[in-house]
Image (cartoon, rainbow, N blue to C red; front, top):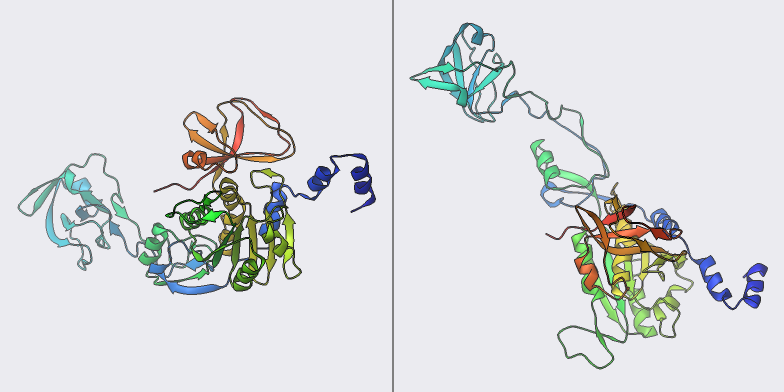
Length: 420
């Protein structure tokens, strides 16, 4: 404690709060510190069919052109465009189904029946769709108005040429990407490992659902909520422990997970009470503290640090604070560790449909609902209330130095993952 702080403490009964404010970090600082201490994991080669949700660890260049040949985009008739100037009808001299080829030249006045996806003959430069054609025996009569050279033909390499960059390192693999890569004949991809995650929930008062609730106890919900949030955002829980407020139990789970998992998420026990034993353990010499407490509401008592390969996120016990801290800090960290180039929840600037006021000093993360008219901050913002969170589809962020927002003013909004 420096001399200025000592004097403040002597002269001002609020000096404890002043000192606490001096030690807290801003929202932006907390985010940047976490990101600076999280790095992508090693890469592994896996089958393409198992790659959904993983992130590429290297660029992929196309081994072939797509389409690999001129391809019919319609069921119809392939012919030379120049023939249409002198012929109102054509003799049909053959048929090409998808997967087959036509190796004969097209003589004047002739066309070939062709189906979607089939290779267009080398000397054909138009496919006339069958809706423009009247057929009689093996002769077709064509409605020529509006036809253009190259119509209904997918040019070779019109999607991608051989050797071109198909996907970049850091891109996530979704269903469309799997289809795209498979179409190029790619059967395996190099991706970053996803982080192995452990959750530890602490508290003597916690009781599992399904039993009669004891007086003074509450049902435990954070582990189920966190597991669901992780799975919805593309991650899995490898380990889960529920512990009492007991030094030996807490020591055991730390020994079990530290330097063995990539991310350890703790909830509860990190404030300044006599039974906040998680924080006591976190302050031990073997664990490197990066910061403790953030200038935000909810979730001010957020602790982040590391030990060996394990990144430690100690979240408050109140469930709404837990979920907000997961979305704003833990989720982006896990994305960084997975090698992703897109880290945070999608966000935007949306008009607020009512006035809002707060005190200066803490940033607010507010459960909200966006519709066509704008965004509305929901009732029930207390950190222990999940009912409002269950109705929210976004989080409104109000910076710490912002006091008043008037109706119609735009605010930053983080969009929550969609429930399918």
